[in-house]
Length: 425
Image (cartoon, rainbow, N blue to C red; front, side, top):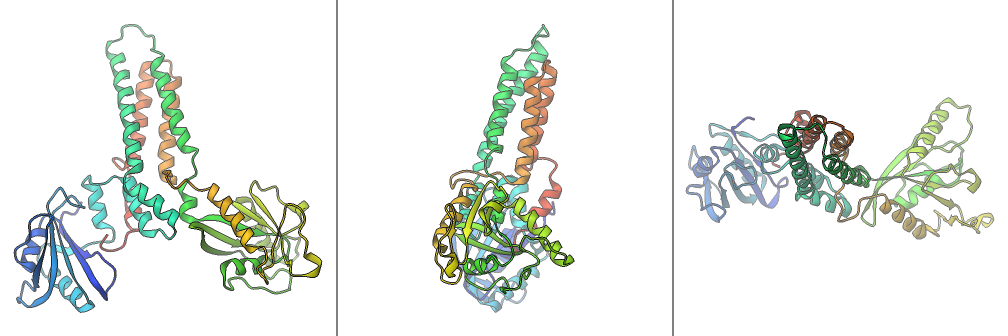
């Protein structure tokens, strides 16, 4: 890791009432003193005049904080300037810092990466911070905060302690047991831990919470799909005409419903078509129907696709011939709004059932992959007939957890993850 001292604006873009400029690294305190004079005691705020180190020109009067390694956010020495948030003020202070030898501007996410590399947080907490920055709904915020505050880290530590105890027992048996018989309690304990991991893998995943529950609106041409999408979105997002085949490609509308993230998807009308372009749209629509989390079906009930979570909608109830919906369908008019509240409640309930509970910690795809690796290794340990094989598979399970927390073999993951952070984080 580059051990140079770094600096950046860590708050939002100016102008603002207050801006926070952060310096982190081995020369942070010296750099802070060159601009602010004497620094306050560690973890204490004090007002200081900020001056250009070359000319002595007064730049601003700011609140200055000092943090000492390792008890800081990055694990390094840190100085923060809480200055006035005008563009000229911020630019002048950043230019003054850039003029000091040994300092450079931080890369996006570099403060958090240093926190990880210095052992202040693990990879799961870093992922939680990235998700927290990107959170747009209340559900996303709560899930990201639970991860960022170390909820999954604590659970992984508990699993690792169990693995270490099992490994120690296996190694003891290899060294000291004279007969070749395997104590049945050891593979049984491995199987019990595997079952616990499997229960976590069976939980709803984080991807739906992050990307949104995919709600696909489908049906035959001219069923009112695009009009319904526009009514739910509250704006014209899809083209509406009485010409069959108007929608040729799917349209995605991200929205939040009661704090639940959704990806509402309009699709081409499902029918036989000789038009080559329309046929491509129909094929895509069929694939989207198959991959939908919730299917809103605007066709006849007997034409429904057998999707496990289907909401049958009887559209255009404002027309005299369609005033009475069949049993099991929700009557909706995109023109008058009739039935929309009931439909939205049903969509929200179906979507919420597919998401992790508010107090539950959800695994993302990468985390689930490594938990699955550990579970498979434990399964092999639980069915092994020799203690040497048990010990080897326990070692493989421990390696999977090391990759999960970022202790081994995750450089490509780190580069991708910290690139998601903004400058100054």
